[in-house]
Length: 289
Image (tube, rainbow, N blue to C red; front, side):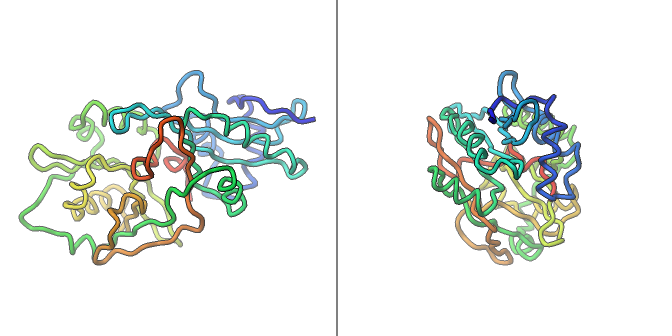
């Protein structure tokens, strides 16, 4: 008979044997461990996930990546459900793991990289659509946004960026220092915008995926400078931003890319709108594709 218990770092070797079922050659063993157990923001006392055990053997796992965020002047807890996998000999026990995770009513739950089967299950269990598309910015869209008299300073050096951030932004910087992120700071006079992005590949093409904008209006006004900063940091000529942060309108030279499956969320005790949720402190900060 199987039981569910809190997953610990000591279980990682057995969990990693299960994770290999995802067939993601871009993710090394170190990448998986960093994403699920060694990310830079874990707080003492929070579980890394749940393990399905048959005696001493770990035969299933679901990761929980928690964060505490100040959003709209209120403290919110978020939890990214990640890497739900079960040994094929235990198909009827897989829901035990998910149900254990769903008991976390104190946090907004996120499903960001779901398969078609898991998306159906999550939807039936009360999850809502977070978004179903991303917006891709191209050099043409960056050029179209250029204003020659409206320039700003672009900084990609981490030490210089850290010095220019507010206390709250510095916390984000420190928490994501160990993740594979690009940090970009745009400044004009007393105003600035801080960006955090990761480098992905989309159909074989390198893309900078922007996960966080401290000042969206500033970003869109200075899109040309932002794209130049990401090119310097990542060497990319295609830049991606989640649809819920795309300001709801198509721009010249940009286009919409439909996600294979929608990203989903379940509100916690304090409801958040999709636009208030970003991908910081989630698997997307470490996942390699």
